[in-house]
Amino acid sequence: MRRLKFRRMMDSLPHEPRRHRQAMIRWVYIGTVVGLVAFLGDLFVGNLFYLRSEGLVLGDVAVIAAEFPVTVRDIYVRQGDRVSAGDIAAMVSSHSVTESIARLSSELASRHTRLSELRVRLETAEAISGFAETRHNIAANTRKELETIMVRGLLPTDRRSAAIETEYRSEQDLNSLKAEKRVIESEINSLTEVLHEADNSVAELQRLYDQGRMSVPMNGIVGRVATEKGAVVRTGDPLFEIYGEKRYVLGYLPTGGLYEVNPGDRVWIDTGLRSVEGIVTRVEPIAAALPREFQRAFTPVDRQQVIRIEFAGGEAPLPLFTKVKLHSKFVLSDWIATFWPISAGVTDLRRG
Image (tube, rainbow, N blue to C red):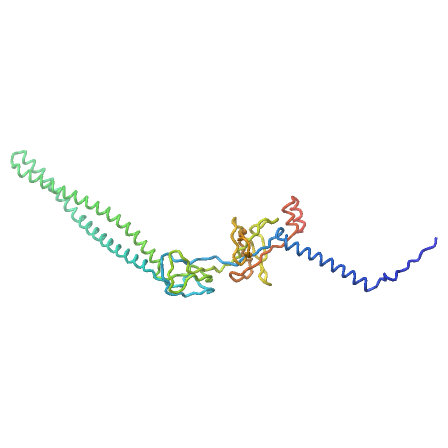
């Protein structure tokens, strides 16, 4: 049989540049389509498979509030100032507190005077009681001797009556002194307790007022100044907000995803081109309204579950109130592990 000889087609040369360009264009097109599909899938359904949310950098907050109506005389701090515990943030004055301290001090002075008088009376009664008891013993013995003499008929009746009268008065005076001592001691004990409580109340009021000095309770940064010089502040109204130096991220966790977020999970905290690592420390069982900058216009108020994320060791905390983006790495085996019982084997294979 005659062997056929293979002849190349003129339009299919092996080194034709046109075919290389077509193959390259085809692969670029396929890659573009796949990338677009992946982008759109991540955009619309990516939240179902891994954590992708937003958060806000905060610090442990302490609020300096007025515990009584005050007038702000001077302000020594501004928003963003770094302060230390014990620093004076403002000077205030309160006419009601000044009057209360003056009135209570006056009442305390009068009660202390009363206590001093009672103690003088008690000392006097104690000093006389010994003499009154001796007097009573002498009167009783005298009456007994007179009764012995009277039995013999050597004493008139009026002398016996006088002795009985003397013994009666001495016993009456002695019992009166004993009763007075008991009453004075009881009154002194009650007054001492009342004075102790009143002294503590005045001291606590003076400590809270602190001559109008509003002190900073902890080291941190002044976040908000809610008053101004000359303003009248009502009881309970905040004057300043102090944010502690230890910062954390308050994240908002979308619900309804096919993943779980647990304490100890590591996430990435992004702001612009900077990315730092964080650790989820607490997943709150509540949903809170998102801050205003996270809300979408013309839509109902959005609420999401709250999580607390602390910066990993060695990571420099971001500035306070920085708006950040949160995301976790999507690992296919970890996601599959939530649905199939063979997840342990898959995870071991991935780690190996």
